[in-house]
Amino acid sequence: MKSSYRSRCSYGLTKVVKLEGMPNDSKMDFSSSVRSGIAKFPVLSLKTLQTHLKLTGFSLPLMSTIMNASVKRKLQIKEEPVDETSAPETKPKRKRPELPEYSLDDSDYYVDNGLRKVYPYYFTYFSHCKGRWMGQELHSFYANEFRGLTPEKIRGRIENGFLLVNNQKVDIDYKLKGHDLLTHRLHRHESPVLSAPIPVIHMSNDMLVVDKPPSIPIHPCGKYRHNSVMHVLAKEHNMTDLYNIHRLDRLTSGVLLIARNTSTAQKFHEQIRNHLISKEYVCRVVGKFPDGVVTCDQPLETLSHKIGICIVDPKGKSCSTAFERLNYNGKSSTVLCRPKTGRMHQIRVHLQYLGHPIVNDSFYNNDAFGPQKGKGGEYGKSKEVLIQDIDKQHQRMLYLISNVSEVSAEEREINDRKREIALKALHHYTNREEWHALTEKYKCDTNRLITDTECEECVNRTIDPNPKDLLIYLHAFCYKGQDFEYKTAHPVWALDDWDYD
Image (cartoon, rainbow, N blue to C red; front, side, top):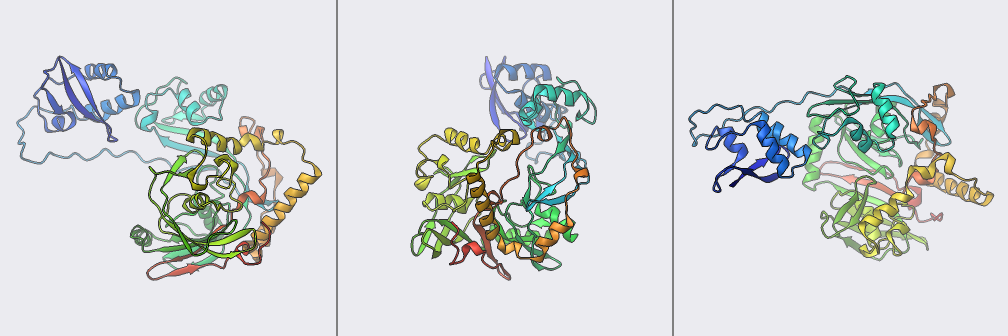
């Protein structure tokens, strides 16, 4: 005989569990019935429940969640009369212990070849065990999460104490449990950014508005920590306790609003949610953009979170952008963009869909999207193949010094020319006195270039990026709200006389 128990895990999934030996008409909401103390049926032991969960095909992480969240805490009840008309008694949630502060060994910048670089340093990363990690053996977990590490290096790092669980060494086959504290100490290299200053447009007790240069992310993420707007503002201007109001893509430049207290941040977030803030961007696109105002309402879907690429897809999130041509130089057009929503890469993908991608956008103005480069949402291949083709073009191995062949004199001349054009496009930032001051202030000290023989990036070094690869012609020109308006001058590449396409 079988019956159904409906068990809910802590993150909202629902699955019907068939249990042997129970009447056919025995159906009950497992979690709510246990909470209220109703004992209509025999209470299963943890071992019996675990056996049934295995037989019904539950994954190990889901089993662990049900056992921990729905059984261990909730089955400790007393069989007492329950007034079913009264509201169920709620128990305070168990507070997850706070993580330790990130430990960043002191590091600094240096400027080399027009790039702001960071001396290599050691970094300690802390994380609580996530639901999808529970039950995994430690060596398997690190192999999945840190794909650059070989099994031999993973074993060595665990045995040498670089990978700890609850601040202790454990065996490589240790199985992760809920609330385990994972500690990973590693040698970090940050990707270079342009050594451009960050001009301040407005500053008050509540607000900070800056003109973000291209190539630098707003906040620490991925391969960037010291090389982020927030960290540079703290270091260069002693500005701390800053709160993000909105975001700009790493390669995008322009107006960036930052709150200096939580109340201001909440006020601006509410205005953004209610669509009370208007945004204007300028960009330079391929070809002659149509006359008049062109609106694109195509929904967007994230194709790959790993490489951060979006495409137009009917099942995606709704969004809208209005475009209007400002000038045309015979080869490319400067276009004013008014996004009504704020999806990732919205302007770039909508322009690709319209057949006018941004001139120097290496992602969306790319043959990997097919002969038409994604115009009209036509790619000529499956999503899986598209991801593979884009990923191949941006793999780290392509930039390893050991894999870069000697360039010819002609190729070197072309690269130098592209570098020169990129520096012209950055005139908006490089014409400032701070540009030259940065070079003098942060000269390279070779004694601080620490190497680690166990570090993959120390062993396999990469070439420096060309400045042309660190910017796109997309600039946040103006942000306007109920009681404010902040704008910058147009970059030189957006002017009528720009002729370096």
